[in-house]
Length: 337
Image 1 (cartoon, rainbow, N blue to C red):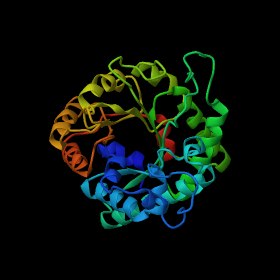
Image 2 (cartoon, rainbow, N blue to C red):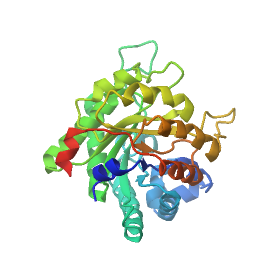
Image 3 (spheres, rainbow, N blue to C red):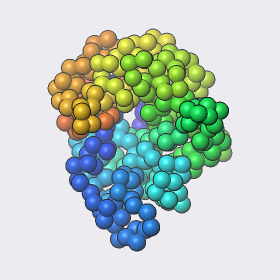
Image 4 (cartoon, rainbow, N blue to C red):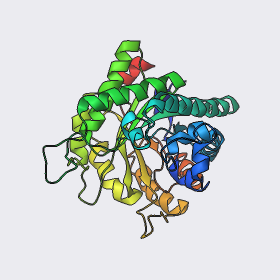
């Protein structure tokens, strides 16, 4: 049961937003803390990754809803699962456990669905977010040479996350929402380190973020430049997620689709946020835009980011069934089968 073989057969569907689904639970500070962290000295509300420990049933339920909707791949609840991001909550020491537990929960749900429907194997992608710091830019306009984090800081933090995700049972790793390519390179470097040390292979998905109408990532790269700068790594897929709705993301997918032997992925937002920061695009509206990707044979993996729900994924999965996947010829994949 390899994801590489499945990708050759059909378009695979990634899940939708975890944060959007968690918001519906309206968890209080006490809910985030649970019994274990009830006396913790810092506020913990908003730390969604922590819920894999304090509210595991909610995480499990959300994963199950996405699989029921037709997803082939779910992401672990670990978008902020590094010591760098967890420093905001003074929870750096919890990073290994957070990632391990999140992976374990997701894998349990995936195994359950695969056993029920062996013709449609389910996969778990270890979600590796960008952290809240940039390695190639200064956060201080008055001091452009300053860096809040170094490549080595990121490499060490990512390595810890990656080891825990693999120990917890993920099938692949997803380095996503890349706004600074140097951050992503630290994550990719750490993955290669772990692969070498453990003598293992694990597929890697890489997903950048085009931040606005400029058509560039935050660190200034166009879609094509981003692709070129990461193509030395053996990737399962490359693509884009977040920031834009499906229609605005399309030209950037078109820019890379015929320039790479890797599979192409996309998980756009449900449109652009309204004045209240909410996403209004209905599953049908989003589906109509994503069908344009399918008609143009642009993608191999499709899902949703901010504002998407199991209903969005249900519509997308149904559409994907009617189309053939984009043909790709990743030579490295053959050795993984």
